[in-house]
Image (spheres, rainbow, N blue to C red):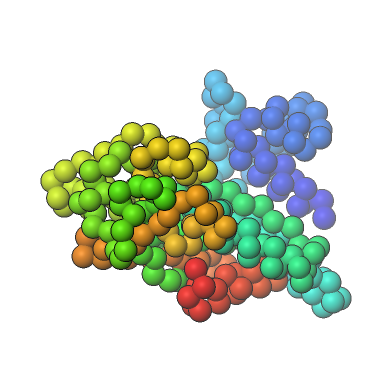
Length: 298
């Protein structure tokens, strides 16, 4: 459908912020793509982009148009998915935004389980924060978000949620290796490898430290959970995780629950854009994730 091609051209330019880069992605010349954008602007009677030093940026009119286009593209993807389902073919694509900690085990396991039944369904997974989850859904960058304690948003519709008690991770010879829950005050005595301040786990930790009029003992911070865990294995650093973020086969690290008198459990949410009808493949995967959370399997 020719009009969809025009929509995808505009969507790609808006996402990458550059006509040249978008042209490379779309496999057309930048001059041809620029002409198509100018034609759309002429048809609408208003410019859609501001030309800036780094490329192009949607203006207010462009934001309105791109939201309409993305809604139309998402709806057409849903229709195509339903048609393919009628033919007995489960195809389609599922775009997921999730907290990085959940990429360790939950997301890989659930994708593998789904693709075992529906091998023609493809996936893309992007890291989101508690603040960016709703925006990823609004921009249709993601069909589904799996995120710990997302910021409140009228656009984020929670399909299912499950409590997550914060865990502290350390190597096997660490002095914190004692039976039972660990008190947070004992954790504060040790240097830590922490996610950055946009991360939901870090938000919980900062809040708990502030309630005690103290500061976290931060030795290193990174958005890469594999790096944090590797560092913990090699010394007396500690780090933190969700139960859903602990890899069952990682025998080099021990983990203990933080006493809930010190830090309350947070909630792991699986959600989608409010009032959006998902394509069949995405809807089925969202249902699978919801059942996992509701059955306490994370």
